[in-house]
Length: 193
Image (cartoon, rainbow, N blue to C red; front, side, top):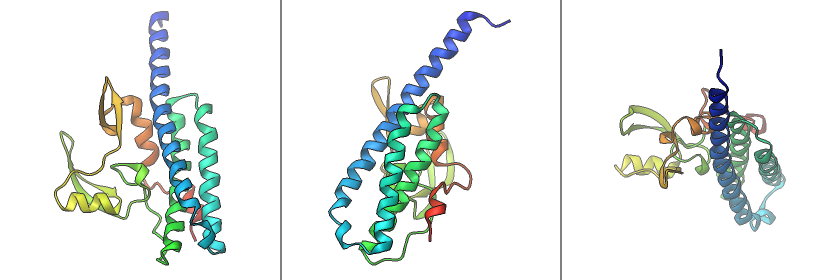
């Protein structure tokens, strides 16, 4: 027999988890919008394929923006972060085209901070209390790790202090899992050429 108090506690915890991941999603959407705004001045230099990439980034950004308030459970963030990954990959393609570089390989986002966009390579990293493993990293964080420096980690506020998103407990698990599921390439795979 389930007790009403237990059910209320689970419902309250689910509401708190949803609020926590919604903050993360809002922050990520806002940060992406700021990046798109900075990139907007470069659009005139793009060829047709570059404009398509830019439009794909805008469309994914707008879809993520609409999705955040519709989230009903913490697990719903997986779809939002997949959409954000799509936008970031499209933006990486735009930057490559602007710099007349080859298009980036479609890879998972940077483990340390998914806001950094697609990873460029895997690095061996030892997380305090979690052991050593290979994780995807953006070029800047890969260089930091290679130099023995601390990577630029995505943090969240818990109990009045900022900690790495992966240390925040079960409330933020769907956030990390949404970005780093096995074989993750998200909707961006459909945009890759």
